[in-house]
Image (cartoon, rainbow, N blue to C red; front, side, top):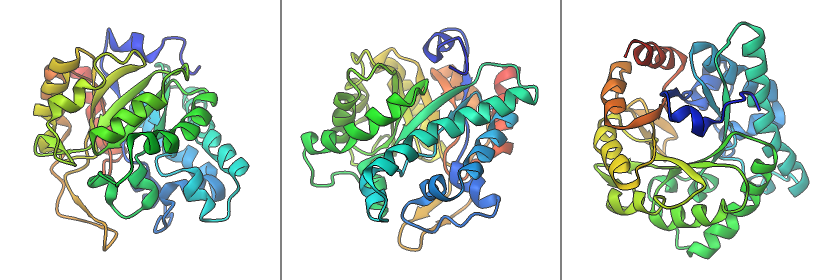
Length: 306
């Protein structure tokens, strides 16, 4: 463990800072991610780049690194001719790369506790067609559970502090993920992607969050990969419905054009917004797409001042 204090225990006494977007940090370092595997491709080709991206966030003030396994799946790797065995090694490497970044940060003088969250993105991330922002793939809950369980088993065996079940677009996939993490021995957070106070598939958030209220494995519930403007109401709902700490890491406010594979619009994210999110119940706060180390440093400063 990078820290002798569990993340769940830390949430009882403090607000924890998450990192920002992996892809934008890698692109800022000059790496081309215009590929269906996205940042997961670098696990096979340039794993040291993943470690350096994590390190930049730890040095900026993040307490938690979210691994580069969001789009890393057995099925996605198979399309590139990567065997099941090698794919399992790469999934485990995503956790070890974040651990190595934590060791480097501590060797450079970072003395606060650091944790690793193993990312498990939705089924739609593997499709690489933007369907994680729609959900409702035409698969049953059982089929989605069979898709997620093998990857979660490998990630859990690699020893992360928490599993990040993230960017979940609908309640069917949330149900499947909650089933899939049972018995793995690693806590998890469940994080929906939302729009206008509902899941991306259009379900009310109180119903969506209620699925995790009694799940012992789940230590936090919340939202990510959404507009900053959608955060505060969702935080209040998650806290009220579940009684659990809330996790929040929105995008910059720009919008992803899946057809053009490009971001459009302007950023509306400011570190000062996090004060209201914390007051509403958020205890893990960071950024997702297009939120970089500078913004994470601003979040850390804001929370420290608060």
